[in-house]
Image (cartoon, rainbow, N blue to C red; front, side, top):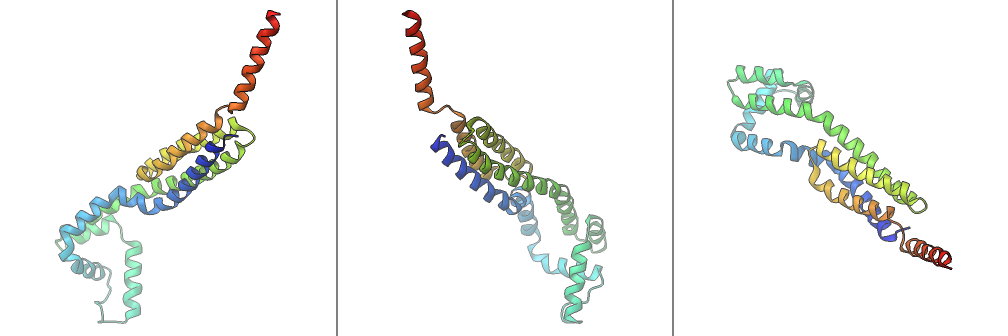
Amino acid sequence: MNKVGYVISLIGGILAVVFSVLLIITGPVMFAGGDVNRFYSENSSDMGKIWTDIGDYNGVDAFLQGNLKDYVSGYTDALKTIDANELEDMSTRYNMDAFHDLAGLYNKFEGYIPKLETGILVCLVASVAALVGAQVARKFRTAGGAMVLSAAALTLVFSLVASSIIPMAAASLLLFLGGLLQMAKPKAEIAKNSQETAGSGGGIQQ
């Protein structure tokens, strides 16, 4: 067993698990953080009106003009069911480009969410496989090392699918390094093979 490779693989696997869980935050931020920030910068003064118009469109009474429970449940239902078509309709009805921009953000996230879910699931499974591979390599260095290397490739590719490759790249790099070290022949085995080769050569000469 290569102790250095084992330790590096464990560290890489643990980091991969952590970064896989954090994909739910880092993924959306890196995917559309700039667009969301731009939207807020351009429409910060109209956020109150946007909120009020969403309520008006869905028949929710203005704040403090009705039952508070109905106000909360009305907005909750509205936000659950709102879609890009409704946002475009609001843009026309209230003559606000902000709703058109929101519709664009909605469509962008609608196509991204399945990728994010797949990325998180595969990265988590691959991270656990890396930790298992590190243990397997203690007795079966080639098989265990191959598991760690495969996990490194999967975490790298699917973190890219989830649009958050930078944090995971560090963990993947450690897994690549750890997997290669665990697959390498131990020095003692190399020395033994060298001695056996030298002995066989000496016997033939005699």
